[in-house]
Length: 122
Image (cartoon, rainbow, N blue to C red):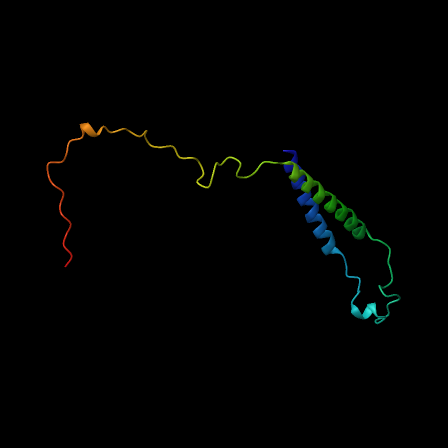
């Protein structure tokens, strides 16, 4: 129950991180700006103050990494397997339909009619 809740919470954090990253504006850091073109002040452009979206990205990114590590550790502790209930490749083991019956050769009666001879090849 707790692991399911944690997995749902982790999926929600992933979704929020995706939304926050997609809502941010581009910084204009193309290849021309890296080499001094288009009025850039430094190689990586002028640094602006951190906005709410930048801080949210940092927080959700940290929660994403911590949650991924926690889920990986929790997954290693669970030793159960999907196939733990099956014995082999056939699924459930099959039992013989009936016990073998010993036949006494002295009580057998021969057939009255002889066996048909094999057909001649033509």
